[in-house]
Image (cartoon, rainbow, N blue to C red; front, top):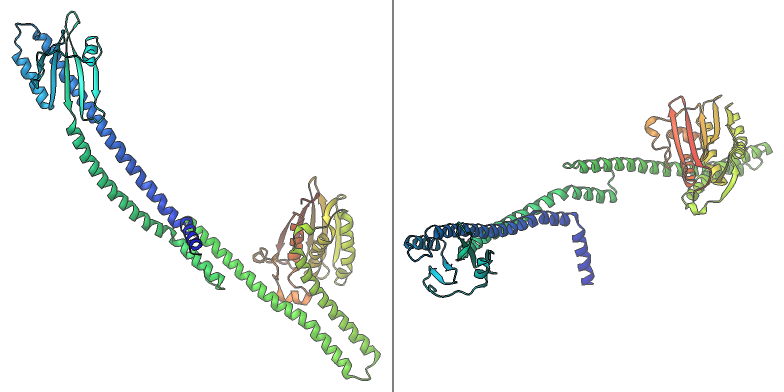
Length: 480
């Protein structure tokens, strides 16, 4: 159990933005500094050795020219000045210089150890053959250079200078630089770590505010807003969050109103039925006409109750998956004719003209029951929220891919600020009028769900007191 808890805690830590941001800053800030230090020290070491070799070669060539010009290898030459020059160079660079003649005899050794002896060296022999060599000991403790002594006129190699010098001072300087670089790198890494911690905390602080607001919203506090300063992206998130909260508040208000309205709507018919039934029971000798009148009223109240229940059941059915769609190929023209025939008597009670305009025959793959329910709700709403002696026009058209149904009316219209919410369940624009007309605020939600289940789209255009137009677009061939 402890192991599982530890793994969960570790995964949570590694997955946090703060930890990842901290790690990224450390890597970005530290690795380049370490690489830079290593490269700089390596470059210094290489450049120092190259410079030392170049200086030695320069002085070696000067000595070689001096040996030739003074006739150093001849018996009558004055070699003291040349020896002094050689000794000075050897002393300056803390090294050893050996001069070898054409017979491989050592004629000068600044250490005074090998003079008069014969030298047998591969590098010296190669140098007599015209090949210079520079040998650097693997540990870079010393460097050895062979330089030919060439006769000015004949260009013949008449001797070789072997220069051996220690590079310990370069190594000592390198170690000093390395130590300072390590100290500086550690100091900078510590600074980067501190900066990374502070910045990671600062950068993720707005997310903590968002999390706290979401937690409070989960607890039911939908009345607070989120105000996050800092990054532009966080401001955008804050605005989107507040927009979502505002929308949820409206939906919650609509839901509460719906519960209240439906409770009232369900209770009102039952109350009326009970009052009518009690009135009949209390009158022992009530005339037949009164019984008939009361029974008609009871029947109307039952129909009203049935309408509310049917709307609720229709909404539940629309919430089910599209896998329960019963798709058949039907004539949309005939479907609209049937719907108009059923709804015209309702419109006739208020002298509302209902017209169907079909531009072409349309056959499509749809769920007839669900599509009928959607279109019926749109036409019924157009009649309910219309003016007396108004009109409702239903049109049908199609192209090679979709068919289009428009339901336009001359009714009261929908306010612009309410048009974004009319398809939400429980939402009613005019609550008092909806109650008078028997509406429950579910019709448009049912219609929209049915259209979406057909992979279609529904749009609304409306102006107050100028009427409303709903446009439905559905594919001719059902897309599973």
